[in-house]
Length: 131
Image (tube, rainbow, N blue to C red; front, side, top):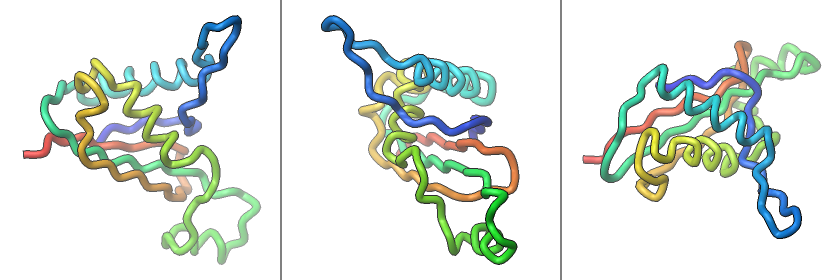
């Protein structure tokens, strides 16, 4: 399980200036952070078909009542906040191209979940080769 602590970012669209596409700085920084965490915590290079499981943990808002916090902890209430699950998967998988695998087209199975946490906001993911 690879853990990427910090504010969760989704893949942002490139901005076009004078006909040139520029990736936003936040996206580049987060992709570099994901790469660094992967290299430190695993660093394995995978070949073939890959299964990816990604879980984004959002901090429970302090404004929530005790009852609502309990419902969050029991996964009765799930996060429906930004960034979107598909953008979380995109930034994680794009950042691992040429690091964990040759290309993210190798991902044959993908699972993305959003959960609440009382701990540090983070994204956790596992990559496995499908036999």
